Image (cartoon, rainbow, N blue to C red; front, side, top):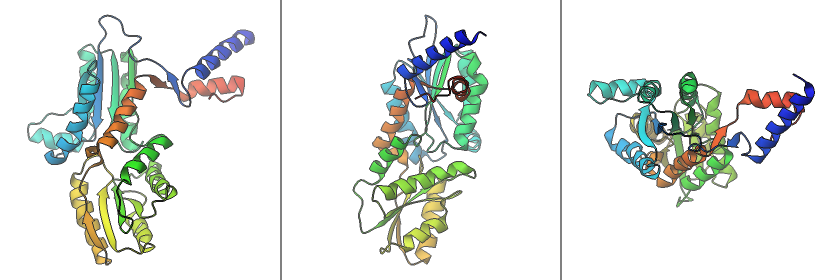
Length: 308
Protein backbone atom coordinates (compact mmCIF):
# COMPACT_ATOMS: atom_id res chain seq x y z
CA UNK A 1 0.00 0.00 0.00
CA UNK A 2 1.22 3.54 -0.80
CA UNK A 3 2.74 5.02 2.36
CA UNK A 4 0.86 8.28 1.85
CA UNK A 5 -2.46 6.44 1.78
CA UNK A 6 -1.43 4.30 4.77
CA UNK A 7 -0.49 7.46 6.62
CA UNK A 8 -3.90 8.99 5.97
CA UNK A 9 -5.62 5.82 7.20
CA UNK A 10 -3.50 5.77 10.35
CA UNK A 11 -4.18 9.45 11.00
CA UNK A 12 -7.91 8.81 10.61
CA UNK A 13 -7.83 5.84 12.97
CA UNK A 14 -5.77 7.75 15.52
CA UNK A 15 -8.04 10.78 15.34
CA UNK A 16 -11.10 8.58 15.76
CA UNK A 17 -9.55 6.87 18.77
CA UNK A 18 -8.57 10.14 20.40
CA UNK A 19 -12.06 11.53 19.91
CA UNK A 20 -13.89 8.45 21.18
CA UNK A 21 -13.21 6.71 24.44
CA UNK A 22 -9.91 6.62 26.25
CA UNK A 23 -7.41 4.25 27.78
CA UNK A 24 -8.20 0.78 26.46
CA UNK A 25 -11.69 1.63 25.22
CA UNK A 26 -13.53 3.27 22.35
CA UNK A 27 -17.04 4.67 22.59
CA UNK A 28 -19.46 2.23 21.00
CA UNK A 29 -23.23 2.09 21.50
CA UNK A 30 -24.32 -1.51 21.99
CA UNK A 31 -27.80 -0.82 20.61
CA UNK A 32 -26.94 1.57 17.78
CA UNK A 33 -26.07 -1.09 15.21
CA UNK A 34 -29.12 -3.24 15.86
CA UNK A 35 -31.50 -3.83 12.95
CA UNK A 36 -35.03 -5.23 12.76
CA UNK A 37 -34.91 -8.91 13.66
CA UNK A 38 -31.80 -8.59 15.82
CA UNK A 39 -32.03 -9.85 19.41
CA UNK A 40 -30.03 -8.67 22.42
CA UNK A 41 -29.23 -10.52 25.64
CA UNK A 42 -27.63 -9.79 28.99
CA UNK A 43 -25.89 -12.76 30.61
CA UNK A 44 -24.81 -12.62 34.25
CA UNK A 45 -21.90 -15.03 34.65
CA UNK A 46 -21.36 -16.39 38.16
CA UNK A 47 -18.92 -18.93 39.56
CA UNK A 48 -21.98 -20.41 41.24
CA UNK A 49 -22.84 -21.96 44.57
CA UNK A 50 -24.68 -24.97 45.97
CA UNK A 51 -25.67 -23.01 49.10
CA UNK A 52 -29.20 -21.66 48.73
CA UNK A 53 -28.88 -19.22 51.62
CA UNK A 54 -26.04 -17.21 50.11
CA UNK A 55 -27.31 -17.63 46.52
CA UNK A 56 -30.56 -15.84 47.34
CA UNK A 57 -28.72 -12.91 48.94
CA UNK A 58 -26.04 -12.56 46.26
CA UNK A 59 -26.56 -14.17 42.85
CA UNK A 60 -30.35 -13.94 42.82
CA UNK A 61 -30.36 -10.42 44.28
CA UNK A 62 -27.98 -9.03 41.67
CA UNK A 63 -29.73 -10.94 38.88
CA UNK A 64 -33.01 -9.29 39.78
CA UNK A 65 -31.48 -5.82 39.88
CA UNK A 66 -29.76 -6.32 36.52
CA UNK A 67 -32.92 -7.77 34.95
CA UNK A 68 -34.99 -4.84 36.18
CA UNK A 69 -32.51 -2.11 35.21
CA UNK A 70 -31.82 -3.51 31.74
CA UNK A 71 -35.28 -4.68 30.77
CA UNK A 72 -34.54 -3.94 27.09
CA UNK A 73 -32.21 -6.95 27.16
CA UNK A 74 -33.42 -10.53 27.50
CA UNK A 75 -31.92 -11.94 30.68
CA UNK A 76 -29.90 -15.14 31.13
CA UNK A 77 -27.33 -16.49 33.60
CA UNK A 78 -24.44 -18.94 33.41
CA UNK A 79 -22.23 -20.67 35.97
CA UNK A 80 -18.53 -21.24 35.33
CA UNK A 81 -17.88 -23.90 37.98
CA UNK A 82 -18.34 -27.30 36.35
CA UNK A 83 -18.26 -28.97 39.77
CA UNK A 84 -21.12 -26.82 41.05
CA UNK A 85 -23.08 -27.34 37.81
CA UNK A 86 -22.73 -31.11 38.25
CA UNK A 87 -23.71 -31.06 41.93
CA UNK A 88 -26.79 -28.99 41.16
CA UNK A 89 -27.56 -31.21 38.19
CA UNK A 90 -27.55 -34.26 40.48
CA UNK A 91 -30.34 -32.49 42.40
CA UNK A 92 -32.30 -31.77 39.23
CA UNK A 93 -31.26 -28.11 39.02
CA UNK A 94 -30.02 -27.22 35.54
CA UNK A 95 -27.34 -24.55 35.07
CA UNK A 96 -25.42 -23.87 31.87
CA UNK A 97 -21.76 -22.97 31.52
CA UNK A 98 -20.93 -19.99 29.24
CA UNK A 99 -20.09 -22.13 26.21
CA UNK A 100 -23.38 -24.02 26.43
CA UNK A 101 -25.37 -20.84 26.91
CA UNK A 102 -23.73 -19.07 23.96
CA UNK A 103 -24.62 -22.05 21.76
CA UNK A 104 -28.22 -21.81 22.93
CA UNK A 105 -28.33 -18.07 22.27
CA UNK A 106 -27.08 -18.66 18.74
CA UNK A 107 -29.77 -21.27 18.17
CA UNK A 108 -32.39 -18.81 19.45
CA UNK A 109 -31.24 -16.12 17.03
CA UNK A 110 -29.51 -13.71 19.39
CA UNK A 111 -27.16 -11.32 17.60
CA UNK A 112 -25.98 -9.00 20.38
CA UNK A 113 -24.78 -10.33 23.76
CA UNK A 114 -23.26 -8.64 26.80
CA UNK A 115 -21.82 -10.96 29.45
CA UNK A 116 -21.20 -9.51 32.91
CA UNK A 117 -19.15 -11.71 35.26
CA UNK A 118 -19.35 -11.48 39.03
CA UNK A 119 -15.71 -12.51 39.40
CA UNK A 120 -13.62 -10.63 41.94
CA UNK A 121 -10.34 -10.40 39.98
CA UNK A 122 -9.23 -10.71 36.37
CA UNK A 123 -7.87 -14.23 36.89
CA UNK A 124 -8.14 -17.71 35.42
CA UNK A 125 -11.94 -17.70 35.55
CA UNK A 126 -12.00 -14.55 33.42
CA UNK A 127 -9.44 -16.08 31.08
CA UNK A 128 -11.69 -19.09 30.59
CA UNK A 129 -14.74 -16.90 29.97
CA UNK A 130 -12.89 -14.73 27.45
CA UNK A 131 -11.76 -17.83 25.55
CA UNK A 132 -15.36 -19.10 25.43
CA UNK A 133 -16.44 -15.75 24.01
CA UNK A 134 -13.55 -15.52 21.53
CA UNK A 135 -14.45 -18.94 20.12
CA UNK A 136 -17.99 -17.73 19.34
CA UNK A 137 -17.43 -14.03 18.62
CA UNK A 138 -17.51 -14.34 14.82
CA UNK A 139 -21.01 -15.82 15.03
CA UNK A 140 -22.50 -12.78 16.78
CA UNK A 141 -22.84 -9.25 15.43
CA UNK A 142 -21.65 -7.85 18.74
CA UNK A 143 -20.51 -9.67 21.88
CA UNK A 144 -18.94 -7.95 24.87
CA UNK A 145 -17.59 -8.98 28.27
CA UNK A 146 -17.80 -6.67 31.27
CA UNK A 147 -15.02 -6.32 33.80
CA UNK A 148 -14.77 -8.17 37.13
CA UNK A 149 -15.17 -6.30 40.41
CA UNK A 150 -11.51 -5.27 40.48
CA UNK A 151 -10.08 -4.06 37.18
CA UNK A 152 -9.38 -0.33 37.00
CA UNK A 153 -7.64 1.38 39.96
CA UNK A 154 -10.90 3.25 40.53
CA UNK A 155 -12.60 -0.10 41.18
CA UNK A 156 -10.19 -0.81 44.02
CA UNK A 157 -10.83 2.64 45.49
CA UNK A 158 -14.58 2.07 45.41
CA UNK A 159 -14.23 -1.34 47.06
CA UNK A 160 -11.93 0.05 49.75
CA UNK A 161 -14.57 2.65 50.55
CA UNK A 162 -17.25 -0.03 50.83
CA UNK A 163 -15.16 -2.40 52.95
CA UNK A 164 -14.04 0.22 55.46
CA UNK A 165 -17.35 1.84 56.35
CA UNK A 166 -18.15 1.79 60.07
CA UNK A 167 -15.13 -0.28 61.13
CA UNK A 168 -13.82 -0.31 64.70
CA UNK A 169 -10.30 1.14 64.81
CA UNK A 170 -9.54 -1.09 67.81
CA UNK A 171 -10.13 -4.31 65.85
CA UNK A 172 -8.35 -6.04 62.99
CA UNK A 173 -10.29 -7.06 59.89
CA UNK A 174 -9.02 -9.92 57.77
CA UNK A 175 -10.60 -10.16 54.31
CA UNK A 176 -10.06 -13.64 52.92
CA UNK A 177 -10.20 -14.25 49.18
CA UNK A 178 -10.07 -17.47 47.22
CA UNK A 179 -6.72 -16.76 45.58
CA UNK A 180 -5.29 -18.31 42.45
CA UNK A 181 -2.20 -20.23 41.41
CA UNK A 182 -1.06 -17.85 38.67
CA UNK A 183 0.42 -14.30 38.77
CA UNK A 184 -3.03 -12.70 38.83
CA UNK A 185 -3.11 -13.43 42.58
CA UNK A 186 -1.12 -10.19 42.83
CA UNK A 187 -4.43 -8.35 42.55
CA UNK A 188 -5.20 -9.42 46.12
CA UNK A 189 -1.88 -7.91 47.20
CA UNK A 190 -2.86 -4.72 45.38
CA UNK A 191 -6.11 -4.66 47.34
CA UNK A 192 -4.13 -5.05 50.58
CA UNK A 193 -1.73 -2.29 49.51
CA UNK A 194 -4.54 0.13 48.66
CA UNK A 195 -6.23 -0.47 52.02
CA UNK A 196 -2.99 0.52 53.71
CA UNK A 197 -2.46 3.46 51.35
CA UNK A 198 -5.88 4.79 52.37
CA UNK A 199 -4.84 4.60 56.04
CA UNK A 200 -6.61 1.38 57.02
CA UNK A 201 -3.68 -0.34 58.73
CA UNK A 202 -6.05 -2.67 60.59
CA UNK A 203 -7.42 -4.12 57.33
CA UNK A 204 -5.58 -7.12 55.92
CA UNK A 205 -6.13 -9.25 52.83
CA UNK A 206 -5.26 -12.96 52.68
CA UNK A 207 -6.12 -15.81 50.35
CA UNK A 208 -6.86 -19.50 50.74
CA UNK A 209 -5.12 -20.72 47.61
CA UNK A 210 -2.76 -17.93 46.59
CA UNK A 211 -0.87 -14.86 47.79
CA UNK A 212 -1.04 -13.22 50.30
CA UNK A 213 -1.06 -16.41 52.36
CA UNK A 214 -2.35 -17.10 55.86
CA UNK A 215 1.21 -16.65 57.12
CA UNK A 216 1.47 -13.27 55.41
CA UNK A 217 -1.77 -12.18 57.06
CA UNK A 218 -0.63 -13.50 60.44
CA UNK A 219 2.62 -11.53 60.19
CA UNK A 220 0.63 -8.35 59.66
CA UNK A 221 -1.67 -9.16 62.57
CA UNK A 222 1.31 -9.59 64.86
CA UNK A 223 2.35 -6.00 64.13
CA UNK A 224 -1.00 -4.70 65.40
CA UNK A 225 -1.72 -4.20 69.10
CA UNK A 226 -5.20 -5.68 69.03
CA UNK A 227 -6.15 -9.30 69.68
CA UNK A 228 -9.66 -8.79 68.33
CA UNK A 229 -10.02 -10.09 64.77
CA UNK A 230 -13.01 -10.26 62.44
CA UNK A 231 -12.79 -12.63 59.47
CA UNK A 232 -14.73 -11.56 56.36
CA UNK A 233 -14.99 -13.44 53.05
CA UNK A 234 -13.56 -11.45 50.15
CA UNK A 235 -15.74 -13.52 47.82
CA UNK A 236 -18.97 -12.87 45.95
CA UNK A 237 -20.82 -15.63 47.83
CA UNK A 238 -20.32 -17.03 51.31
CA UNK A 239 -20.36 -20.73 50.44
CA UNK A 240 -18.05 -23.68 51.08
CA UNK A 241 -14.85 -21.66 51.46
CA UNK A 242 -16.48 -19.15 53.79
CA UNK A 243 -18.10 -21.76 56.01
CA UNK A 244 -15.36 -24.38 56.04
CA UNK A 245 -12.05 -22.61 55.41
CA UNK A 246 -12.65 -19.13 56.82
CA UNK A 247 -15.06 -19.80 59.71
CA UNK A 248 -13.39 -23.18 60.22
CA UNK A 249 -9.63 -23.56 59.67
CA UNK A 250 -8.60 -19.90 59.62
CA UNK A 251 -10.63 -19.10 62.72
CA UNK A 252 -9.22 -22.09 64.60
CA UNK A 253 -5.61 -21.31 63.62
CA UNK A 254 -5.95 -17.68 64.69
CA UNK A 255 -7.51 -18.69 68.01
CA UNK A 256 -4.59 -21.05 68.53
CA UNK A 257 -2.35 -17.99 68.16
CA UNK A 258 -4.21 -16.24 70.97
CA UNK A 259 -6.66 -14.08 69.01
CA UNK A 260 -10.33 -13.54 69.80
CA UNK A 261 -11.93 -14.25 66.43
CA UNK A 262 -15.38 -13.71 64.98
CA UNK A 263 -16.45 -14.53 61.44
CA UNK A 264 -18.85 -12.40 59.44
CA UNK A 265 -20.18 -14.84 56.86
CA UNK A 266 -21.47 -12.36 54.35
CA UNK A 267 -20.56 -12.57 50.67
CA UNK A 268 -19.54 -9.36 48.91
CA UNK A 269 -22.52 -9.87 46.64
CA UNK A 270 -24.89 -9.15 49.53
CA UNK A 271 -23.71 -5.55 49.67
CA UNK A 272 -25.79 -3.30 47.41
CA UNK A 273 -22.86 -0.95 46.93
CA UNK A 274 -20.77 -3.84 45.62
CA UNK A 275 -23.70 -4.78 43.39
CA UNK A 276 -23.70 -1.19 42.15
CA UNK A 277 -20.13 -1.59 40.89
CA UNK A 278 -21.11 -4.61 38.79
CA UNK A 279 -24.12 -2.69 37.43
CA UNK A 280 -21.79 0.21 36.59
CA UNK A 281 -19.61 -2.22 34.63
CA UNK A 282 -22.65 -3.29 32.61
CA UNK A 283 -23.53 0.33 31.90
CA UNK A 284 -19.98 1.10 30.81
CA UNK A 285 -19.80 -1.84 28.40
CA UNK A 286 -23.10 -0.84 26.82
CA UNK A 287 -21.30 2.27 25.62
CA UNK A 288 -17.72 1.07 25.11
CA UNK A 289 -15.70 -1.66 23.46
CA UNK A 290 -12.20 -2.72 24.40
CA UNK A 291 -9.46 -1.94 21.94
CA UNK A 292 -7.60 -4.90 20.47
CA UNK A 293 -3.93 -4.83 21.47
CA UNK A 294 -2.70 -5.95 18.03
CA UNK A 295 -4.62 -3.13 16.35
CA UNK A 296 -3.04 -0.66 18.76
CA UNK A 297 0.42 -2.06 18.15
CA UNK A 298 -0.05 -1.75 14.38
CA UNK A 299 -0.71 1.95 14.81
CA UNK A 300 2.22 2.35 17.21
CA UNK A 301 4.48 0.72 14.67
CA UNK A 302 3.59 3.25 11.97
CA UNK A 303 3.19 6.42 14.06
CA UNK A 304 5.58 5.78 16.91
CA UNK A 305 2.98 7.35 19.16
CA UNK A 306 0.90 5.96 21.99
CA UNK A 307 -2.87 6.25 21.62
CA UNK A 308 -4.47 7.87 24.65
